[in-house]
Image (tube, rainbow, N blue to C red; front, side):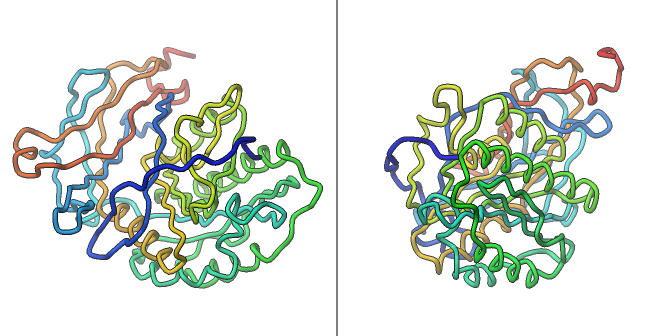
Length: 350
């Protein structure tokens, strides 16, 4: 499942900090903004928000943990709407996390294209799990270009079994005669297995899919959008970590009939990010920063004025008072939502 073009280098973005040094870590994101369906609970549309502020001391960014409901304004198609519910990780009210470590098993791919870059280096992730909350869990899943799509380690509060299983999966060899299309479909089946498991086993948690993958990926546009709808059904977030060997080109996310750089594509539209570093010792910093974002995220809920199935634009901004108090702050959030028929409490679409 590989884009057939040469990698194009992109400039490194600012460094990210949260009481720790991220070092030479690159945060990458795409510029595509296609439709996204969000889950609705009791008629509420939920929007996760991560706030970051420029830090002159590090010339990077730092997370802002202690924001309140009054600090935000929320707009649906340009119209401000009341924030009906508010949860914040820093207060302990946000849902726990179900973290899935995801890899591609195929050894015949170039090291930086898939997941072989982290083979023999998973121990560098271990220190980051000290930041995982006691209520959160971690599991492992993988797919191969031979069509395999499996959950390898079920969700567990102890990360040790997951890291052991991750090493085992990376040591396996895929079918040398596999093809891209088979791998595309296997990736989709794997994602749906993970989401189904998260819904059945940990329905009160927030699923987070961390792809340890170079993101040399692609699939048909309609299939990518269908996966996005599935991700949003359970408010899943996607993150990525790679060695930067396959450079991300935001201009090529849409390439003819296919969507490519799928991890970047899914991450931006679900509120996550992709991090790249050639230094394995920084893997723990990247995962630590992901945990930090999840622990301080704010979740805004609102009741949509209309229960149609049209595309709606979302915008979140700081209140006037918060903007004065917190200059040079950026907000990371979902930019679109669209209700499905099953989300319609009125029954008007039946």
